Structure formats: structure tokens, C-alpha cells
Amino acid sequence: MTPPLRNLERLCIHTITTKPWALAEAAGHYAAAGVKGITVWRQAIEGSDAAAAGRLIRDNGLSIVSLCRGGFFPSATAEGRRKAIDENRRCIDEAAALGAPLIVLVCGAVPGQLLADSRQQIADGIAAVLPHAAAAGIRLAIEPLHPMYAADRSAINTVAQARAICNGLGSPWLGVALDVYHVWWDDRLESEIAACGREKSLFAFHICDWVTPTTDLLNDRGLMGEGSIPIRQIRGWVESTGFDGFIEVEIFSHRHWARNQAVFLEEIKTAYITQS
Amino acid sequence: MTPPLRNLERLCIHTITTKPWALAEAAGHYAAAGVKGITVWRQAIEGSDAAAAGRLIRDNGLSIVSLCRGGFFPSATAEGRRKAIDENRRCIDEAAALGAPLIVLVCGAVPGQLLADSRQQIADGIAAVLPHAAAAGIRLAIEPLHPMYAADRSAINTVAQARAICNGLGSPWLGVALDVYHVWWDDRLESEIAACGREKSLFAFHICDWVTPTTDLLNDRGLMGEGSIPIRQIRGWVESTGFDGFIEVEIFSHRHWARNQAVFLEEIKTAYITQS
Image 1 (cartoon, chains in turn purple, red):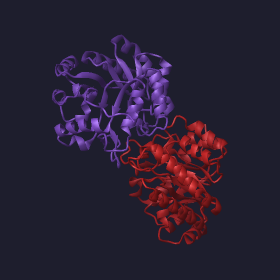
Image 2: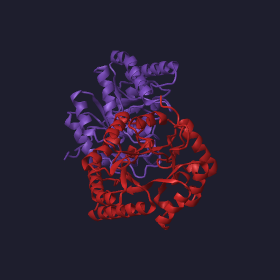
Image 3: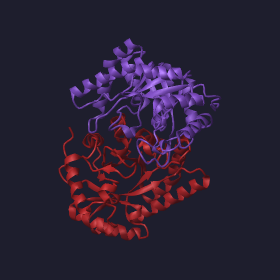
Image 4: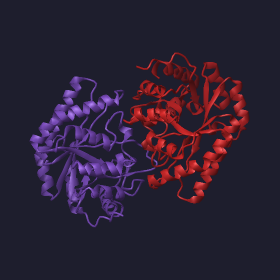
């Protein structure tokens, strides 16, 4: 059995988890609560200066773990795919200005387009932006998304698929972001995580829970312990690879966003220790 | 490219697809519309005599393709698992009385229970009921369910997992029910269908579509052509195995149930020919 986490040293929270809070508010609350890391969603810094946002975060003593998110490479038109590549280059510049060492890629999909075509466009898109990422010193992590998002958010739906792209491109700047919500059902998960370890491609680890019933495909995630995901077991598999990076709490939930975010933050800390 | 279907000879409709219609109404409308097969959901004959329901259907000139559904084997308690086995034996008796040669299994899951445990309980439960099915001359088909149902409806989420149970039990009475809705995202689908063909385990083929956005995890399926599933491509893979059985339209949709079912039935016929 994987032992419980003893303290908050590896706890990172995604700004989207406490969406009602503006960035400065989130950073202040996280730091005061003893959280050590923050992953910044692009909308949290939209319209503001990324470098200033980065300073604000670091002034609170927080580590910037990643920027969410790049990706959305597939398009029905060549023009659309070019625009997506341009947007990902801007995202890399933004991460560099912010001081985020990693970008999470939600790879994209086009309703009605064959998944095989989208998957090829994703590989092509990542290949096109990798040199820019490497030059900026920013790592890219492909996040396999749950198969319920295959039609419109990501045609990459398993760790095996993410690894295949990583292995095809063979760059130390490209890896995998593992979110338990998306992959917990996969009976190949333990061996796929081990393979990521061997290939040194496990760049990020996200947690939350799957609630029953799930009433919204996007925004009904649970706090750790509220649902069915064996988070601690999966963390054990992740740590067996040698991973000792941040454990990132990423929860989209209309239910939790409607609550007092300071109370929610305390619950996150408790659930992190007792359920993760 | 797989050629279009030329006529309705292989068209089967699930009673749940036109849920507002009682069984007699559905059978009459299907037959008048030129539909050849019907799959009966248990609730459509609940409280009535299964043998009489079977006669009613055959009197309308329809073939009974299958009974939906058995399964739900996992439980947190041994008592619960025994009850599930008993219920599946009753379902087999009901299929025999109805004159349905096949039962579709939605295998079950228990929120919070490890999927590996549920998967073992499913294999054990099927093993326990198989002799009763064989004695009654009823085939059982494991339907892999979409991973979004892993927590509460089925821990069997890929064709590979369904095949593993079939191969483990090695009975000609046990096979796979393939529903495009559940498996279309799987990049192993073509090879898994081919494997089912070699193993002679492809017992049923269900169609519908995945709409964007999907607003309800259970009851927001689309009519063929309304969404992203390459139904004709998948039908081609299925028919490459030699499968020439019924093509079953199974659509759960609050949207379509709220409409005039006679109009919907005509749309199903058109979509079957043009989109499947």
C-alpha cells in the first residue's frame, strides 16, 4: 500500500479549481494555506501581463508548475491548423514570460472528423511547435483526455496514444500529463505509467475524483474521496517510476465553484492528505 | 469504402429507441414500416407474459433479435452477487419464454469498488449463469460500455476486456455485443473486431451516434448521422468478419423521445440507409 502524503510540500492547485478567485486572490489564499505550487490557466492571466503575473505568484512564495493549456491542433482546414500552431507558439511565449516550465496540451478534435485524421494532425502540430518550445526552454505535456471528449476536445484518449506521439517525435521536451480523471478506467494504466517512467516522459500528475452520478461532462468533477478513482493506488504507480514532482489538484465543478472558496480550499488540503 | 445498405432487411430497432410506445404499438409500427427485427427491453414486457409478448411480436412478422438486458453482476456483498446471479437466471428464462435467442449483458460496476474487483466479479457471475444459458439455448453477449460508465454501469469498457472474459470462459454461448457508441473512440477497434471475428464471438451490432455537445451521460444519443461516429466504416470492419446479422438501432434520447415517434421512425429508416 502506498503511504499517505505527510505534508503539503508537493501540493499544487490549478487556478481553475478555485475559478471564482482572481489570480492575485488565489495566489494569496494558496500561499497562506501552505500550498506550494500553482498551475495557471490562461484565462486567469488573459488581458494582463504574463511576466507581472509570474512575479506576483513568486512574490507569494509559490512555484509555478505549469500553464494550462495549449493544444487544439486539429482543424478541418489547413488555415485552421496553421492558426492553431501560431496560437501554440504564443502560448509558449506566454509560459516563458510567466516563468512556467511546462505547458499542458489538450490536443483537440473536430466533431465529425475521423479520429485517425485528428490524431495525425495533433502529431504534426506538436512537431511544428516543438522547436519553439525547446528554444524557449518550455516542456510540453500531452494530456490524454477521457474518451467522452474524443469528439470535440481531444482525440488522444489513452496514455498509450500519448506515448506513441512522444516516441514518434523523440524529444526530451515532450512528455505526458497524467490526470486520474481521464485515465482511471484504463486496464492498461499501471503498465502504461511504468512505460512513461522508463521513457522519462511523465511530466505532470493531476488529481480529482469521478462522482456518481456525473451530471455534466465538463464541470462535475469531484474532490478527492468523493468518487470512485483509486487515487492513492494510481499515485503509487506514478511514484514507482521515481516521479516526485507536484501533485496537482484540478477540479472543474459548478457545485464546488458555487461554494465558499476558502472553505473549499481547506477541504482540498484535508482530502489531499487523507484521500490522495 | 463500405457500400451503403440497400434495403431494410437487416434493420432491427430496440424498443427503448421508441420508449413512448408500448410493445404492441412499437411492434405494429415497426412491422408496418418495413423493419424486420426487434430487440426487446425488459421493461417493455415487465408485468406481462413473456411468451404472449413473443407471440405478439412474431404475429407482426418481426424477428426477435435479443433481450436487453442482463448483467449487473458486481456487488459489495456476496449476498448481492448471489442475487444478481439469480436475477440473470430469471432473465434467461424470460428470454426463452419470449423466444429471444440472445441476452445483452450490461455487466455492472459498484461506485467506489476497484474496477479490477468488479471485473473479476463479472467473470465469476457470467461463469455461474452460463450453464443455465446453454441449457436454455440462449446466447449471452457482453456489451463493453463507454469508459464514462465505468464507475456505476459497467467495468467492462473495451472490446479487449470483453474478449478476455470470453476467451477465459471458452463457451460458444458467450460473445460480444458491439455498440458503436461505446467503442468508437478506441484506436484498437478495427483489430479487436477482427479478433472477435476469428474467435466467432461477434454476436450483435448496435448503432446510433455521438452528438456534440452531449448534455446527458445516459440519454443524449444521436440518430445516425447526427454526430461523430464513423458508423459505415465500423460496419465495414464488422462485416469483414463475415457478420451478416441484424444492425440494431439503439438510441436513448430525451430529445427524440419527446418527438412524434412515427416521424422519428421514418427518420431512423432514412438514416439507416444513408448514414449507416
